[in-house]
Length: 143
Image (cartoon, rainbow, N blue to C red; front, side):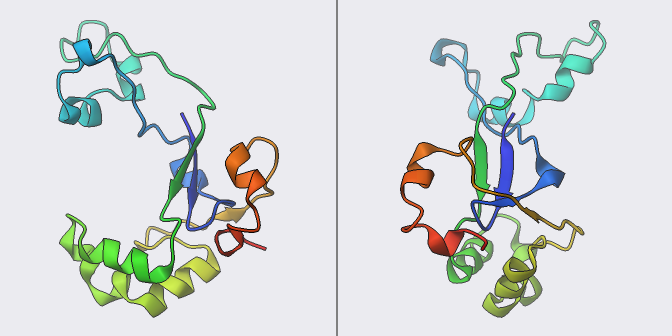
């Protein structure tokens, strides 16, 4: 379970935190990448023990790091959205550079879901690499 941040290293996304997208498995046990993506979720732990589709060997790691999403310039986010599998996000209302810059400035979700992100302080819980290179990453830190 990871803290999720959007657009900037210190723009906290409480709506998608904790992020459970990162998964680990031993190669010998890996059924498929799609299986990991779709079936191995925290919600499986709440299923009735009689469910045959329940993944039984899930170990959850709390505070397991950070998920930094779209930490890039608006131009690159636009390019990403235009080449995204969900082609509905290639429309100008999502992918125009001006629109993306506006949403980053306001700290709001790109997809109109009503998410508003919160500025947090970069503290010792962050990766040492980021903390040691703050000058290099200034454009990706909310002042």
